[in-house]
Length: 267
Image (cartoon, rainbow, N blue to C red; front, side, top):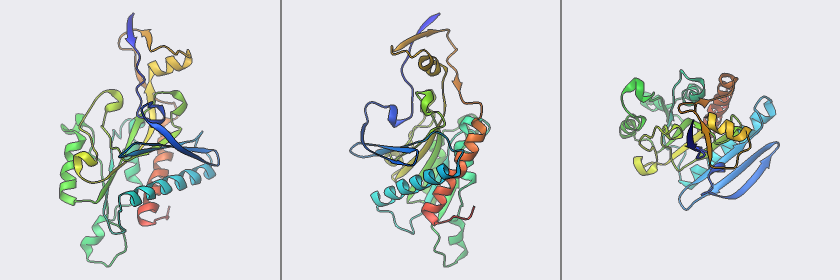
């Protein structure tokens, strides 16, 4: 047995001690926690499950409300164009959130090419795939597309890693800090953010997986920073119903994006 120095690996603001919780509110059984810094903020929408229609409606309302706040923060206008990027691996259920959300976003960017007097916001969608299949990092393809399309802002959707079983499939995170693809599993790639692309980047993520060491730590209620297990046993795991959950939550997020940015409510 080798000693492993356990450090909580998480993408969630609610588990990062460096971020201060400055505001929270509730809607029904849903809790919303906000964390602020000088230049960016995080919104964590926490719920028990999404099985009930009323819960889905409330979650969608909150997502729309928080996305609208970012429009105001960055002084984005009705005609400003949007690029929605879905990160992750469609073939792996716990990593397919980004691709599935893109399936539910209505792309309207082509309308402007038809010389139609339309009131639709130009929305483009893109799935960069994974480095194993493409040979290049997501940032490179996103950067090239941003240079070509010149969108006024981005939304990036990705699956996240939770540092506790408590938040697995039970939280939606929205932030304008940006994202480092693969960072949750220590596969660090170049950051996708305002700093690297020059346009506002809003990230929507859902914790769909955690580490086996996290589950052990939670189950044993360990407070120490170290646990012992055999090398190679720290697996990334997800819930048994992850495919159903990801399908449901991706439809919900896609609807929220459509209603926020083009007032579409047709599904």
